[in-house]
Amino acid sequence: MSLQNTFNVLLIGAGEINFGSVEGPWNHTKRLEQKLGSRLRVVGLVDLDQTKARAVIDEKKALIKDSYDSTEVFESIASAAEGLKGARLPQLAILGIPPQFRGQSSSGRDAELALIKAFPSISLFCEKPVTTGPIERIAEAQSVRDSLGKHAGKGVVGVGYMLRYLKACADIKDILRENNLTVMATNARYTMAYEYAVKLGWWDKSQSQGPIIEQATHFADLSRFFGGEVDLKSVSARTVEHDTSAGSLGKKGFDEEKIDAANRIPRITAAVWQYESGAVGTLMHSVALHDATYDTEIEIIADGYRLKLVDPYNAPVLYIRRPGLAGEEVRRYDQDDPFYSEISAMIDAVESGSSDGLLSTFDDALRTYEFTWAIRKAGEAVKP
Image (tube, rainbow, N blue to C red):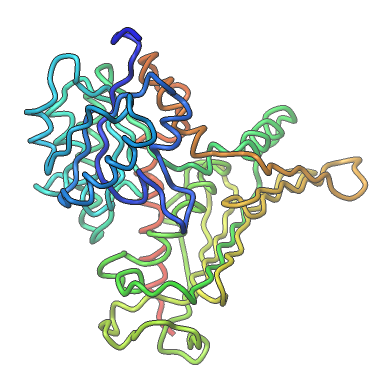
């Protein structure tokens, strides 16, 4: 195969986001392989854990030699810039590292800025949320957005809000457009099964920033996707805190006493807001279920219509009530893979030079991040 037909990818992170795990569906290399086939060339992998990085590449080489045979392992973006030149320059970098190391301007947390400096024409695919950290870092993320905006025309930038790429979400958009509907309200529910969540950092707001920012971000984003821009000043919220009788949990598999009381996460967050269109939105995030199965759904209300998307992560089902329909129409999407769809759209954008097919840009994803912080702060402002 001609080198002109190959597609060069630089992977940032040797963990489950890029290489998968038994616990979840994230696995960007799998989708790159599906999309590009023999065209794929993973030219480099950046990870501080060199042993782990070499191990995952060796596993890939044994299965897909051409795509990984010449993959170099680097401990930093700067060293990757030194090692990847000429025909080995990456066209796309996949940022599969924790959000505290990207989306900011300070050294060690500035992966996007480091990449566009090292590779001036590179495109970026960033995981979500765009960053995490104290609320003051929103200003840093805005600075990164501005720098990436200047990068437009050299490379495209997409963010992995994969639920936007569900076929069910495309169907909802089509129904709204084809029937000339204006959304009146959105109602999202995210009920977490917490029994096997034992990493202390997730339960510590000083590390994970709390469940709205770290976990419910997908549903805050879908709310914006369907409802439009949020008037952040209108956001209000109430919480059930850890130190109330209603917030007592009986299936914790860790010692919460190791976390400072001020940093323990709320068990329930219930938020309401107004969209700039005048529509209203609600979101309830709950840390409540036992076992391992979550319960998630989002509902969109318009004149004469109720569109309810249930279990979008695993087995999406869309329930449609419309004028003249007795009962509900039910659409199931058992074979849909939004992770493939978002990677496919990203590759197409890189090769066309246009971000028109991307459903989540950095600027748009940053507005979701700002929105989730507004919910957290609104909940913290009112104490029982």
